[in-house]
Length: 198
Image (cartoon, rainbow, N blue to C red; front, side):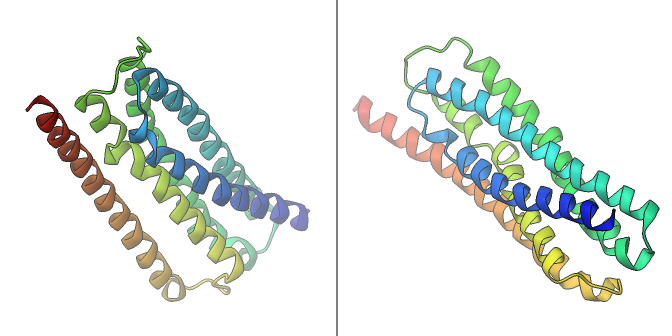
């Protein structure tokens, strides 16, 4: 039973790492859509990625909870106190921040016209709260994978605090970087519009 649950959890976290890297790449490229129609289709596909990045962490969390009921605390302590919260945090970030903005983006581009994107839609497509949760998910998935390879067992917060600080710092830096990309994209688009009108 232990080996099956461990295999399921590790497989779900490995898939989460792979899929989150793909999803973060796709989310960061939403801004490069040429038309409203293209952005609409890409935003709808991002909903699939958001749901996938929800199911995998929930599978890992469920196996951790089951493992906690059948195994010794030495085996499940790091899973329940480190991996499960990191996985749950990614789910919360995606559903509280990215999904509402994805829904709004799909709604705003539902006309699917062939005209080029305006500044408001480009800014929406590169919004930090839409894109950053996908990239932060890949960082936290990498952190979970690190804790699989190098588990702090027996569990002590002192052994886990430095990797957690690094993960959260990377997450904050990625959020700042995405906000910078959002501002830069809007400024460069406004600049190109101003030169076109001259």
